[in-house]
Image (cartoon, rainbow, N blue to C red):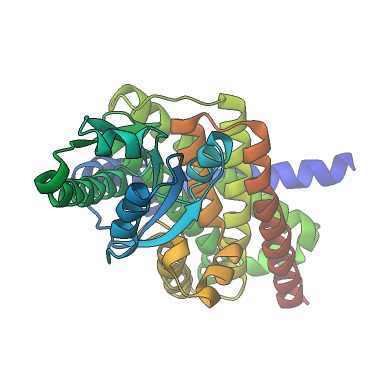
Length: 369
């Protein structure tokens, strides 16, 4: 056991030295993610098309149903969840099932009939600032349009009151920077792990590993730990930059965040090692990374909500570690996600990590044999 540990530590030391002595590797793992962090923070914008809504209608009147009907007939809105109480209303927004919630109080109909001002509460999920701003704007337009229809007859004034949860001022950087952390961690981890075994083959040192006393498991472990440590450290550095330089508040537990990042990176390491084990050159490994990376980003919910995708692609996202990585970073950062919610998202990541690492180990052992 001690001898095995000594061999693994020697291989880990060799990996760190190899990565650090390579100027290209230093540029990839240090300069690129930090540069992209500052560039993307100011350059990325997104557009939202479909909006899901949670509804509480305490009035349950003809007037309130007419207003809701205006939302249902709008092409901007898609699914409507009629909830019975505030707890379910909050859960829909907390779990990101909806982009906004609409709360109609029990005095809505009486206020409209008596020509008194009445408020309609619009609650938006501020974690997705672009969606929150657009959804709040659409809701305001519909309410104002309905208000205009009834004003000529009854003179009532319906005022939309918008509340943005988790990001009250809709700071766009709060959303984009927490997502960028996950995106750049994905790039760093994939590149480092995908190039590790392929680099050995290209440099002609892979045969030396085969004839060494190291077992296939020890070699795989030695190839896993250095990229994982480097990616974890750089992720923490980017997190510190986001908190200090960009003033994004960190609402959650640092220990839960570290656990989430570690397991997320571990699942991505498995993908990178599998790509590396089937690649003969570094060029093939980079192409493999690009082939995986683009679909992973598109199916993560970063570009468009997962609920808007066809059912087949929604199921496929359960195999995508980036999806859960982004939910965890954004949720822990902005919402202060608790252990139960974190654990629910960690279960798929743990399963993905077991599958990808096992597949990488099996492929690697097969190549050795």
